[in-house]
Length: 150
Image (cartoon, rainbow, N blue to C red; front, side, top):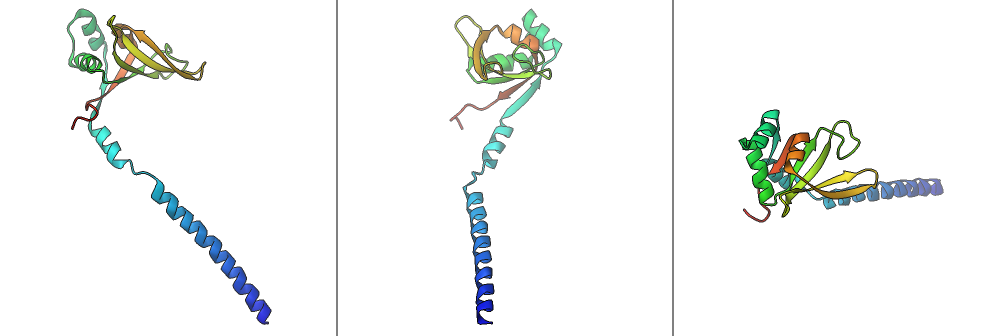
């Protein structure tokens, strides 16, 4: 009878130890997960999505810049990257459009553009006229805050 009780106590000790180690590992892993809520809040408070229309594109062609086009040009002049959602398959095979990043103007007044190329499974860099980017653009994401400046 004493052997049976000792065996039951050992089984419960082993099960308790396993559950304790499992609970401890869950607790440790949750503490090591970084909290990005402050960063997410800061980014969401300092950005804007701009929907582009034909009026914006035609205004750019005519030289009568709308406020949307002015903010895009200002960001690119200050080398603040702009994320552009395009509605064509020019930068990839995605029928719902592709996101590209325009970073700044080069010396020939073209815009550096970075996009993901699925064929080479990597990112590519090219330079295009702003006019051709705006022709394909649906909406634009602009981060309004410069890094390091409070």
